[in-house]
Length: 160
Image (cartoon, rainbow, N blue to C red):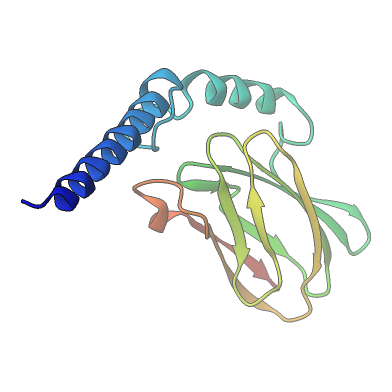
């Protein structure tokens, strides 16, 4: 082998060791893990956040509430691999204020056929408004990869 080939291979090996070391440090020392169906996500943080949310208004009662004539508030909680509530029923022409958060990992909140497309970050509250002018069923999906069953995370908004 030529001297330059050996130097190039050595440099590649060093870079590979550095990257593997960073990966090991992130997963072991910092406790960063991908979601899985068999365990808790962000073990301590997720559990604490779930307990706090279950006692904190408005997330202690997720769902749709009429706050004024023609105005609604939809409180949504995203967690692996579901939205709570899974179905949101609204009348045509309703002005809806969505209040949403995630309890475990970053999730997406995308209502197909609308301009509603929001990232839900654990522990942060996202609030956004939308008016549904056409009746129908709108698919609600998570557009941020959230783990091995990400493709099953969906719900619907029913406008009558």
